[in-house]
Length: 342
Ligand code: PBG
Image (cartoon, rainbow, N blue to C red; front, side, top):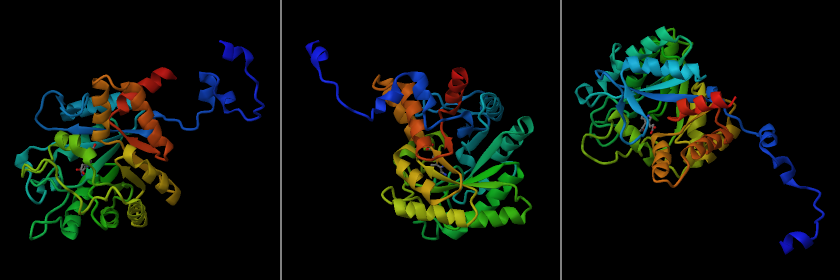
C-alpha cells in the first residue's frame, strides 16, 4: 500500500505496454494469424473395419474405414480445412521386403483418393510416397543385398511408380516422405512423362531422424517386425543436430522441382523452419508429428498443462516461425473453434 502511494513517476517515453492494454487492442496488433486454410489434417485409413478404431498412443485419433474418411473430410471441409494427408494402416499380409503393395493401383490409398475426389472434388488430397506402410522391415525403402541399408536407387525406382499410381488415382499432391536422394527430380520427371504435370510435389525436405514419430508408427503399424522397439532411420533421415545440412537438402528439393517444402517434426525444429523461410521463396509446410501431439495430451491428462491453450500456442509458434501450412492432428478441433470465435 505505502509503495503505491509514494512512488516516483519515471520518465519513460517508450512504453511497450501502451499497446497491450486490452484484448481487442492486442488482437488488432497480432502479427501472426492462423486460419483453417493453414491447417492440413493427417488421416489414417484402414480396410475391413466397420467403425473407427482408436489409436492408443494418440488420444482422439482414429483409424477410419474409407466411408469414415469421407465423413471426416466433409467435417473438415465444412470448417474451412481444404487439405488432407492420407496414411494407410496395412495388415501384415500385404507387406513384403520390397513394399510391393505400394504399387497396387487398386490398393487402399488409391481407392480412398478416388472416393474423396468423387465426393468432395475441391478437397486437396495429399498422398504420402514412402514404402514404410508396405515393407515387412518397416523401412521407407527397399534394402540392399547385404540388408544393412536402404538402397537409394532401387527405392527410387519403386517410389516413382508409386507416385504415378497415386497421381493417376487423383491425388492433387504427392508427398515423398522417404528422404531418398534424387527422389523429387525422379518423381517430377515420371509425373510429367505420364501427362500428370498438374500434380504438385510437397517434399518432406527436412525430415529429421526423430523419436517423435513413435505414436505414428503405432497408428500405421510400421514398427519393425524384428521386434526392435525403435527403428533407426539415420542413414536417410536428417541428423537432429544438423541445421546447415537440413537447409542444403531442402534447397536441393527446390532445384529438383518441389512445389512446397516441408520441415518435420515442427515444434522442436522451429529454427529450421525459420532458416528455410529466409533461404527460399517456396511455400513452406511443417508437420506437427504424432509425438508432439501425444506429448501435449499426456501432460494435459496428468493435469499439468491446459490442453487447448498449449495446443493453440504450439501451432501459433509453428506459424510464426514461417510455415504457411501446418499438418496437425489438432486440425479439426482447432478449425471448429476458429469458426465459433469469428
Ligand atoms: C514415414 C512417415 C513417418 C511419419 C509420416 N511419414 C514416420 C517415420 O518416418 O517413421 C510420421 C508422422 C508422425 O509422427 O505424425 N514415411
